[in-house]
Length: 351
Ligand SMILES: NC(=O)c1ccc[n+]([C@@H]2O[C@H](COP(=O)([O-])OP(=O)(O)OC[C@H]3O[C@@H](n4cnc5c(N)ncnc54)[C@H](O)[C@@H]3O)[C@@H](O)[C@H]2O)c1
Ligand SMILES: N[C@H](C(=O)O)[C@H](O)COP(=O)(O)O
Image (cartoon, rainbow, N blue to C red):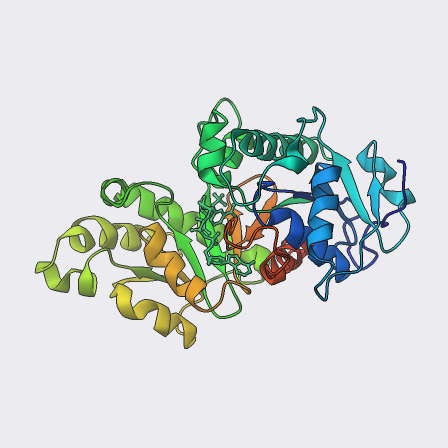
């Protein structure tokens, strides 16, 4: 280690650090990390990234409330965290540095940014799978930059499923978006809407119900009431607007109920989220990305957290993306990243 930083979070029951990947260096990831650190939210967290990128990001904040420059402690190894003094941000640099990252223009798709983002994710998974870290929080990546870097994954979720799998098979994971009022778990994630409809099968709905039911104990809901959305308007209106509810979704719900899962539906998608928000369901199962994510994000990008369910480790993320329109301005809100760190700690504590 060659500068001062933070000891493991003393309020955390888990002595291992949380790892925070820096995300796409052309986006807001680095500056919301520095803003969160400036608010004292990253004790016990080690950022995996590029020190010059983080210093550049700190520079963006000078004219904001998060402005006072955060000391950065550069670690040689995660075990150095114990020596880090309070108030500084611990950073584990990328094993293979990529030249010029801190000179890339803000707000642009760049293959080097995608390559760096992927390298940090891989390193984070390697550390957590080796038992050297408690869990992973990821700052936003740009999917086109990831693609430009030659990565075959449409997002973190699929990449983490692959890296966290075993016997050559990816882990069976699902995306959950959560805030204090709503939790939504998706049957299908990053694919075209036409393809998502094809992917809504009885097996996919049933597996999603099982994963949501099994993992909910981690956030203190051991027998969650799961409201299942239909696919079609008014959940098909008795077959008038499509038969997927009758032929595909209802049999999955019946099978889940037979296993003791408190699933109900299929419910009309346009009202199921309102009903959940009023307290009728703990989780809404949504059939495709926008059906499930729009209601959560509409309640405010600052409070949503993305959680990957079904991995052999904890992974959370802010619910927003790289916000290229804001990158480098210092005006991006770090609240969702901070919520993601809090959620990871809560999941690790098992409540
Ligand atoms: N966690 C992730 O890695 C993640 C999540 C969502 C989207 N993405 C990716 O990010 C890229 C850009 O996506 P997009 O433009 O659709 O969504 P976005 O979330 O980046 O931006 C949408 C809008 O929200 C605003 N916004 C986002 N975060 C904000 C913050 N912290 N504070 C204030 N305003 C904020 C932006 O300025 C923009 O107006 C895409 O490649 C997308 O796939 C990544
Ligand atoms: N679907 C997510 C969202 O819109 O919030 C986002 O694409 C992030 O996905 P990953 O966590 O898989 O990168």
